[in-house]
Length: 185
Image (cartoon, rainbow, N blue to C red; front, side, top):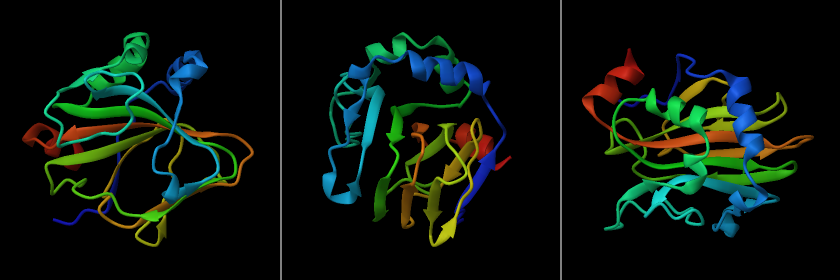
């Protein structure tokens, strides 16, 4: 099966999730490390990372150290409950912020689809109609509070012309029969 994208049932009270994002301290946001693939402001607030390190934003699947919740996630009870609605094991979880005038250039992430061992879900927390997300040459319109499965093995890019930040809750999950059923049913 080569599913490109699926909008899943809504999982969130968007106002509660937005309140928790606003409560994060400025030090929670780390500039993204892959500077050759973007321009403008792009930052990450790690909620679950290798070793639970609150400054570790690289979701290294080859690490021998397990993924653990960071101190930031421990302070976000509603976000924890949203994550808990998704069945199965999770690896990296983070809020990702593409600031106004930010552009993530076209690229592929590998081994992140429902046909692989891991997949990625996006829940837009703050967005606007001008923010563009392109997947395999097609614009995907994601609204606040929606939950999306996207096949990130395909080429994708993002552009935020402004005027506000675009922030998504990004959840990397281990594919399992329960997760497969959750996404496809």
